[in-house]
Every structure is written in structure tokens, then in C-alpha cells.
Image (cartoon, rainbow, N blue to C red):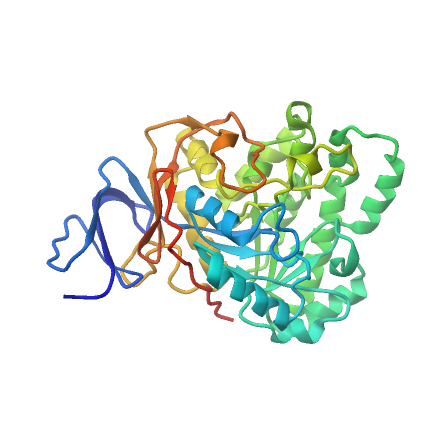
Amino acid sequence: MSSQKSLLIRRARIILPDGELMVGDLLTRDRQIVEVAPQISTTTPTTEVDAEGLTLLPGVIDPQVHFREPGLEHKEDLATASRACAKGGVTSFLEMPNTRPLTTNQQALDDKLQRASQKSLVNYGFFIGATAENLPDLLEAKPTPGIKIFMGSMHGQLLVDQEGLLEAIFAQGHRLIAVHAEDQARINQRRQEFADIHDPAVHSQIQDNQAALLATKLALKLSQKYQRRLHILHLSTAEEADLLRQEKPSWVTAEVTPQHLLLNTSAYEKIGTLAQMNPPLRSPHDNEVLWQALRDGVIDFIATDHAPHTLAEKAQAYPNSPSGMPGVETSLALMLTAAMAGQCTIAQVTHWMSKAVAVAYGIPNKGAIAPGYDADLVLVDLQTYRPVLKEELLTKCGWSPFEGWNLTGWAVKTIVGGEIVYDQGKVNESVRGQALNFLE
């Protein structure tokens, strides 16, 4: 008898790497997919799942999250966040460095990896954050998907907004640089102009399209000068999409959040500060241009920028209310609902949320359903629509900007390393993800 764990999924509608759909079976053994075929028979002891009527996708890789541990665990922690991931079909995440202490050296990175190994139900990786002083750490810390630079809308050590400092980082090493592209000088100036307004809708005017465009232009200029691998986080404006459409070198990638595709400035009227995030929500025109850029490959993939705050924190009057919203539980269902409505195809969603992320960050054996790939998978129900209900959310902050939205494509079962971690509302707390590897 084999001691290796194996799982046999039968009669699923399987999205293959070429985007084609096949009804068939999938067998995993020892954390990997070993066979995908119309019908599989096996004599070894195997856990079987009847997936008739369900669609099998590669697990989502969310490449931008803020999980708040260490230091801000009252908002979220690695255990609660990874449960929320499992419920949302997210099997791997890349987490940002603005925790306390900041993730700016090997010691802080090792601490996060150690915490995740004990607590995280899904796979994990952690960015190293740039400061004005830590260039040696940026070059040497590992394993990491890349260097995170806050060019704007951040304060303290992680704000790197001087062109000379930015250039020094772009000029040395070859590691991927991921930028939060907003121009801090413009934001500061507009903050003074609008200082007397406490309507959260002013947030989109203070951190306007121009602030985003200025920073993205600068990042692109430095990337081209040094041919440095650049990733533009949460692209939010039509102007940035148009810029990339005209000049996007092969070594530059960009992402967009479901919020920037599906919400716009009209959300402030409905949900107030719950709609406040950085970069801010934009106009319906920006929504349309971002969708087109995503479909055309100008934007490469999807990230949530999951950034939870408590409802008490969000209830403060603007500008004291913090920016950010949760997203890992709803991102896949939101995108699959958009696909069912004709905005894109299911195959495109799996490309944007799995394969393209794995390719961009050099994560081996992830993001596709094929023999030899890791058995990180999600079975979704595309027949049933259910609303987003805050009492069902597993994120510690307990709210969603999409509350009440009627969505399809909810995860029925989420599988990490061949083990079922989420099953129709129940989380298997015994499953642990693994640290991701990154090919540099």
C-alpha cells in the first residue's frame, strides 16, 4: 500500500492549460497532479470526490495581500486570512511588507515565513519592502517574490518617493520591483487643497488619476533605463492603461483589482468609507478602459490588494478613516460572475488569476491543471448564485464592499497540495500550505 496521499476527482468540467474544457477525472499523489484523463481507474487507496456538474480550476494565486501579521493582528492574522483564502479558492498568496515590524530585512522575512509555516492553510510568499537605507537587504533577502516600493500614499520608512533613491534601487540587482505608483508630492499638494472636505468621495480627487500616471511614468522610465523587471501593482486609471498600451517593454507587467474593474466613485454614496482604498476607486470610464486593457493583455493579471480594517476604524470621519478593503473571499466569484455575464471567458479568468501570476513571479509548477503541476485546485459551482453575506465571511474584519452582490462561481472545495482545505463551508484546520519558491 502506498503511504502517499492521493485524491481522485471524478466527472469534473476541467479547464485545461490551453483554455479548453474537458469533462473527466484528475488524480493527485504526494501534493502533485499525476494524471488528467476522461476516465481514471486506480487500485491504490484514494479519497474520491464526485464533481459532476462542478468546474475544476487551478487554485487562485493572489499576488498582493496585506495580512497584518505581525503587529496589526486585530484587523487580520495569517490564520484568519488563510481561512478566508481557502473559502475564496485562493491557494497561494504574496503578502506585502507594511506589517509591524516592517519586512525590510532577512530577520523580519524569516519571522513571517516561520509564522506562516505554523498557521497558514494555503501557500505563501512575502515581499521585501524598500526603504531609503536597506539596499543590501533588497539584494540579498530570500526567498521573496520581489521588492515592494511605495512611491506614494504611504508614510514612514516605506515611503520612497525621491527619484534619486528610486534610481539607486532600479540600478542595482535584477530582482523584480513591484511599485505602488502614486505621486506623493501631488497627493500632499491636493490634500491641502481639499483639507476642509470630509466626504470620503474626495479621496478620489486628492489621489487623482494624474497622481497615479506621474508615478507610473517615472517607474516605467527607470525600468527602461536599466531594463529592470518591473511590476505595476493595482493599476487603476485609463491614462495608465493607455500609456502601457503605447509603451510596455517585455519585462514589464501590470495587475488590476476586481474593485477597480467593478466598483467606481458611485460606491462612496452607497458604502461611504468602506469604498476608500489606495489607489482610489475611479470613474465608470476607467472601469471600461481597464477591462479592455485586461482582455487585450495590456494588463497581465488580477490581484485583490486585500487590506482589512475593522468597522470601527472605517467608521472614523474622512480623512481619519484608513484606506483598504478585504478581497480574497470574493475575488474569484466576482470574476467568474463577470465571465458568466459575458465580460470575459472562464479560461481568461483562470489565466489572469493563476497561470499569468505564476509566470510573472517565476513560481514553478503552479497555476495550471496538468501532470507534474502542484495539486492546488478549486472546484466551483457555476450553476448557483448566492449573495455575499457578511455573517458568512471568514476574514477577521467581517465586512465586504460587495455585501449583497449576487455571485456565482463560489468555491465548493478548495485543495492545497492534494488535501481538501475547504469543503462546502467547512475549513480543515489541519492542512498547511508551503513556502513558495521563486525562480530569479
